[in-house]
Picture 1 (cartoon, rainbow, N blue to C red):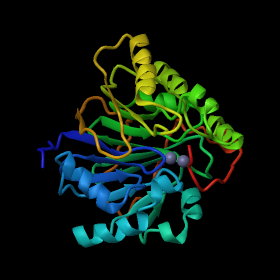
Picture 2: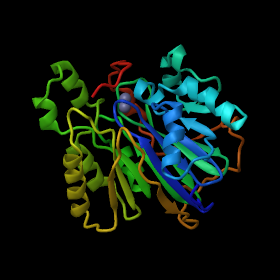
Picture 3: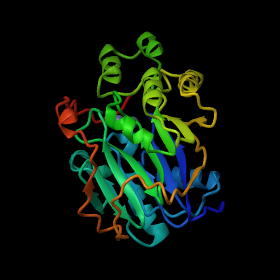
Length: 318
Ligand SMILES: [Zn+2]
Ligand SMILES: [Zn+2]
């Protein structure tokens, strides 16, 4: 296991794409998994592959109920208990919980409101609203001593809230789902093409590049391109769009990586920023099982998102 200093956060995309998503965030003392669309076995194997075998997963943060994000939840729940000797809480919104099938439902669920900031074991966990075709999807961000990492995938467009979230991150996974021309020229049925391109579908390479130009701040050090479509994108196309955006920003110090479906990459590390805490409000350490009373993010633009249609599609084909 690589040394993970207590003063730094490491983010590891374990797998990304429509066949399964999971991202590990840890500091050597505690860790969370953002989504569990990969099998428990693959989660453990891929952590091992990047030198983080034996890292604990102390909570699982679910973005939404599409199977590429929750498929392993019930099994992972049992495997984590067997490996670590205790049940692990799964954090998710009420909207996500309500749509979870029995087969995907873990035993210990902590329901959080969209826009919540949760004090958890010395970290802050944030659930930011995203525009996607499920009842209450979120993007999770994790903060530790001012260091901030987050996963921004599965969104049809990038509202101001996402620009603000991206601006606050040192390490970001951003969705580069499809190349519009490849999607439109491809074999998908028209209705699916429309869903993917819709305001609650997935970000194209160009949309993601625009989000970067508008949102990335000087603190962004590592950019990971995530949730690439196998059918409707190519790593080179996504990289081209990202590098063009980075060039527009005039930055030469951002590392850009493409997350893969079948293997992990990273770890991407960031050091603590003890004097650069993004929010003046911090809460004392709380037990994982007592996250109630979350604070609400002031950036939450619920009315705008709540007005969007809910397509209630339980799959996530792209
Ligand atoms: Zn997805
Ligand atoms: Zn989805």
